[in-house]
Image (cartoon, rainbow, N blue to C red; front, side, top):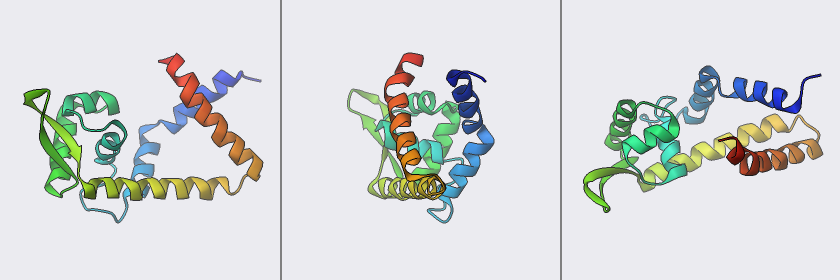
Amino acid sequence: MSSPGTQIAEALGLLLLRSNRARLYGRLTAGLDPSVDSATYPVISGLARTGSMSSARLAAEVGIDRSVVSRHASRLARDGLVKRVRDPADGRAMLLVLTVRGRLTVQRMRRRLAAALDEHLSLWPPGEARRFATDLKRFVGQGLSRLT
C-alpha cells in the first residue's frame, strides 16, 4: 500500500490537471456574464482571493502569462466586472480591482462550487464528508505552507 503522501500527490495531480480545471470553471461560469468563462475564471477568481493587484502580480499568483491576464482583464473590464485604477503607492502603475458586479459574480460562482461539492459529498456518509472537509482545511492551512 502506498504512503498517504503518495496517495495525496496522485489525487492532487488529477485535481490540478488543466482539463479538469477547465471543465470545472466552465460549469461554474455557465450562463453568467458573457465575459466570464473558463478562460477568464482564474483572473476574476484570483482577484477575489488576493484583492487588488497589478496584472504582473496576479499573473504570478494564478500561474498565467501576464499578457493573458491583461487580455482577460480587458475583457472583464469592458463588461464592468473589473476596473483599472492607479496604484496609490506608484502613480505610474495600474491595479486591477473587482467592481461590485464582479464581486457579485464571484459570489455566484462560489455558491455554485459549494453546491456542486455538497451534491457530490451527499453520496458519502455524513461523518466522512465533515471529517474530509475539516482535514482538508487543516492540510491547506498548516501543511501547504510547509510545502511551499
